[in-house]
Length: 245
Ligand code: UDP
Image 1: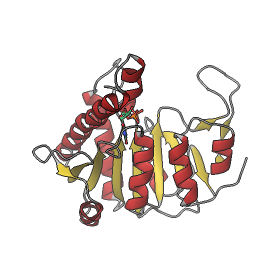
Image 2 (image 1 turned 180 degrees about the vertical axis):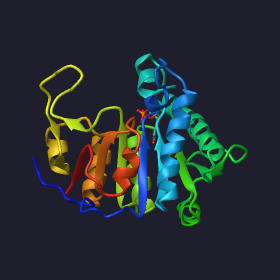
Image 3 (image 1 turned 120 degrees about the vertical axis):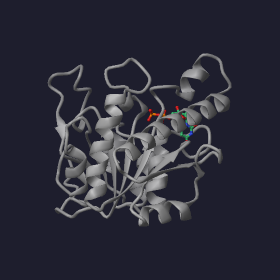
Image 4 (image 1 turned 30 degrees about the horizontal axis):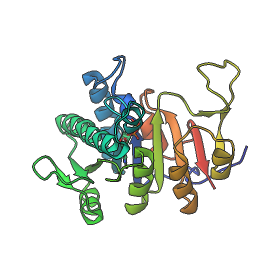
């Protein structure tokens, strides 16, 4: 196990990229969007916004549709991926609505142009909104098939020069094996990028981890369902698993 210390010396983040999986929005439901979870997430994100941390969000679509599932069922992969990217826009709009209802100024920037629904992504617009203190929700992934929203999150993190990527999950960090199936699973306090790739740990996909490694962008993996965890992460507190070096 490594002793990654990137952004862990009690340093508060200036800018964070928060990656939420689509499944994070389901709550106890088997699919779709739970209004209670939206309210919870909006409250947690409001806390980091009020702290003055500029936040970008990338949200997946596993609660609605994943391209790979369509492809396995016989669909053309690129078409299925386009459907997956459109599904992320549905989640982004839901989160945007929840944030605004909770008094947080937010904007949705989509990598696929749909100007009657939301703004089209550009790096300049993202910086502009973040500088104004607005939460920016990056929708439609990278805008390209054959990618995931993990890679989109890392790409946007680099473009907005985020000092930390928070991968919010429903598990309290990265384990050596699945903690839900193995009671003796051990949680890592920290890991290097090379360890994550070498051990094929299921943190983010390998394209996202490679981007993070090449650009020395630390990743914090933590349980987003523990109230206050997002705030702790951006304050530089060591929760969950920190991936760096
Ligand atoms: N997707 C894509 N290109 C991207 C990002 C996402 O084609 O840059 C599609 C892909 O089909 C993927 C779906 O959108 O399965 C939803 O994203 P993801 O699976 O990453 O969602 P999550 O697992 O985070 O809920």
